Image (cartoon, rainbow, N blue to C red; front, side):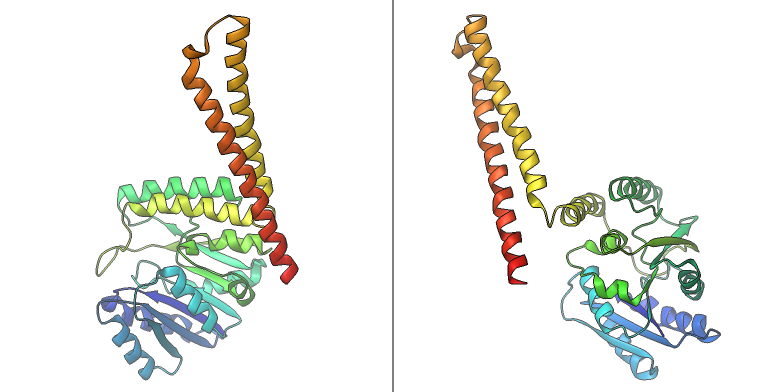
Length: 300
């Protein structure tokens, strides 16, 4: 059985066509199909239309939130409801090709990967969006070690155990392959067509880029240092304290080695003291984090 999860936010013009195209794509396959529509607090008639489609089609489930909670929450809810052995996700804007889903599922099984991400070919986005996306994907590949060209593509297929093992919140849906890697799952990619938006307008603005970078730092921290926070806070605490001590030592050398009065280097002295204090606080934060981590393990 294959479950297709569709997060929806103000996509009433596209939703019915998308659902019909998914149904048609799976009609000639051996997969039993389940479609799960998650309305993320849409302000148009998307939720009403989703319920209407669910009444018409027995294999469609429609649910959602009263307010906008974000794509990660919508996907999390869809993953929770999915009953299929394989789970697919696709955005509701019709820019991704529903016809690619059966091929991606077949490739998932043939390749042995746990997750397959779509790789948009000949993107139909604006020049700025294409450039920023290319930079974003390059940085993400280098920092995370997940070698995908289009890591944030909404068109993905998974083995069911992958979506049951990860927990999404905030805007971490961008980094599902990274979270999956931490759990021991492998990722591959599949070339897919990309289409211009037919209806409505994009939900992403310039803030998407810097938010993505901040979320990447969050993911890298929680995946690398969640179980050993002292390795992060302690290291940087020591580095900062050492820089502060070196600053103070240089002031002493200037005073007693070159007979320069302290008054000439007050700014450097204050800077050194602040670094020492800040470094000690960083180190203390590492110790407190280790205590919390230890206590949580003990309670489990």
